Length: 102
Image (cartoon, rainbow, N blue to C red; front, top):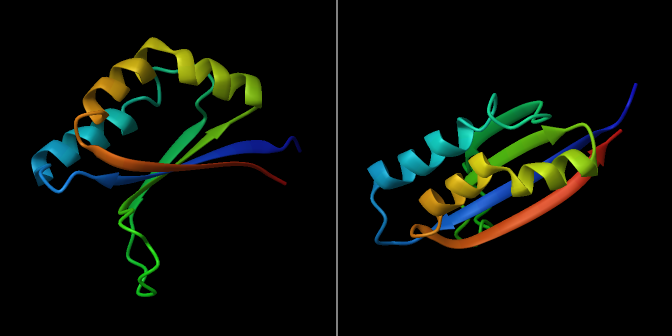
């Protein structure tokens, strides 16, 4: 079985962003599946860890790609660039981890 690339993205949003604005960011991000070739899966969850090590990162997305080449193509895809325009006014910080699932 071929390894899959996981692209994990965590967001910290602006304190001034409303729940409705943040939900639009979430919905727009999730809508990328089906629009971006080789985006095999996307998962989303809110951080519920009781450990209090979140450093303000509240929203976690895990995207699955077949390769680094597919991830690179995603980063330049018009749907991803359009998502970034929705995200930008609300993002305080972003944290990204990429790894291959064996």
